[in-house]
Length: 270
Image 1 (cartoon, rainbow, N blue to C red):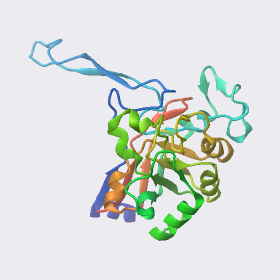
Image 2 (image 1 turned 120 degrees about the horizontal axis):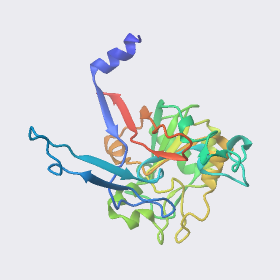
Image 3 (image 1 turned 90 degrees about the vertical axis):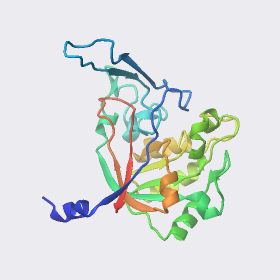
Image 4 (image 1 turned 135 degrees about the horizontal axis):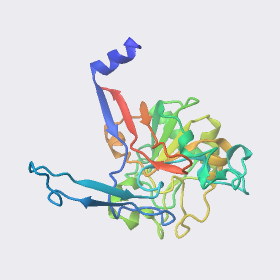
């Protein structure tokens, strides 16, 4: 047993929750089934002889709702998944055996927050703003951190503040800020393990463009084998100025699924 690791735990840890609370009616991509939660049995519906009762729940949800991770099976290009796997043949019995979310190992990685608005001296980025390679490089330099192979890089745009507003977060007419093809290519070249953002589709959505084209998804999921985490809550990290931390994420072990709801954590010594 690693006594050094346990010593760190015993000395105290500070945890920042990066996941959104799952609620009926929360904003989501229109391309996915919504989250639904109900109580089939409530206290008092059935009471035992000793006076006790129990309540229970039922949920139904798309796997790309709330804070979630995209498995490599989520996107194909010209009929191919990552590594050249045939997108049709890979779906055996209605399950993506080769690149489903069950193939994503639990993540305990070095995490890096790139706070782009803070770097640019802005409260938030505007809808449709493309975070450029120069923005990414400048932010890394300003924060004094360097991306290493295997890191998880989280990109804050400030757009996450709109989550509680509902449709404004989806950003149909306004667009949504984020990286695009150039930024994805740059970050993929650094050998990152996963990328995440505080927005609905991770990458930049132009005003009125919706999800019609997602070049960063193609570069990351299909061409590079890099996972994407969407709809993160990054405000706590930004407020505390935490730019480097232990990133913890465990997807639900759903065999053959294209994604999974997640509740990621950023962990630092207390």
